[in-house]
Image (cartoon, rainbow, N blue to C red; front, top):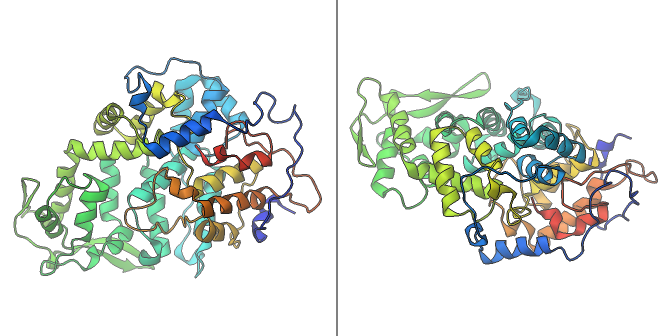
Length: 458
């Protein structure tokens, strides 16, 4: 039986017995699991009481990391960047040195072959399977964790937009994931899934719809409190006529001048009035937002919460915003991954894994590399038991970042049940073989280790 067929079986309600692990097996140099891990208590305290990195002393500096970079540090980098890995990959990164390791992880995203809409039929689960399979096999796994971030930032819900539209949007986010933020913002403004999701498809000069305008400023660029209701109204007018067409079974971006408001608009103190090419007024609005330092402060803080620490220091946010505004997302992540604060004890194991990251990391550790296209097992786990349907964020604000809500009592119980689902032997009575949890969590030695709280942390 192929190992991936474990995903076809219904999840059991009890944990399987832990397999015996040889002390000279896949973990020859790792420490045994510590039942009272101080690292876990410190991380949990920071998450619960709101401790900041700046309070830990000497953090937020601009000098690059100058400490050792061995398996321990490489494991942390790999877990944060990719949410999957093994000891061999961590050792390879360590052999490259810090800068070489970071450059390797920030390689140009590997893009999957995009399936036609007809491939999926009326089923939802193949979309999840395709994404997870790519994450499990790609040579650029950082792009997958980053794509999950952008999908949770530029939210569309497939249940409203159509599943293929959101699938296509995710593929475009992957392609541009390391690009300048401007490229991402321009793309998402024209994206059919976004236009449908936020109802700009029905926005006209007589009845401008404000959904896109509001979320563009509140959730995608400036953040709440940095614009007025009048700005929202004016932005909505600038984007009238931004619609979609439908041809050959797909939606495409379309500007329809007949429903566009041609009168001048005043947005954040600037006039937008393009009589030569009114379709450009939307791009002029985007450029106004891209000129604001607040946009980069907002995005930098979210990226730091996702890749670094749930409460980054103001100094880190300020410096990260400068890097992002002057360069690309790739530049930002290179700066972060080579920053001394990133390798501090306070930053290690300070983030909570989302269900998608938890599932991908554990499946990778057990050796699963493919979920059959017709198998709905993992999709069912993510959607109904672990509480993260990858194609349907809960609302326009997206999923929480590194939130303790991911591991409430009921959801933590489901995660513990998922351990048995992901680690059971491919044959009923045969041993599983070598499983490498060294990147999935610190100090793991066998499946029983995964009941420790550290298994929930990045």
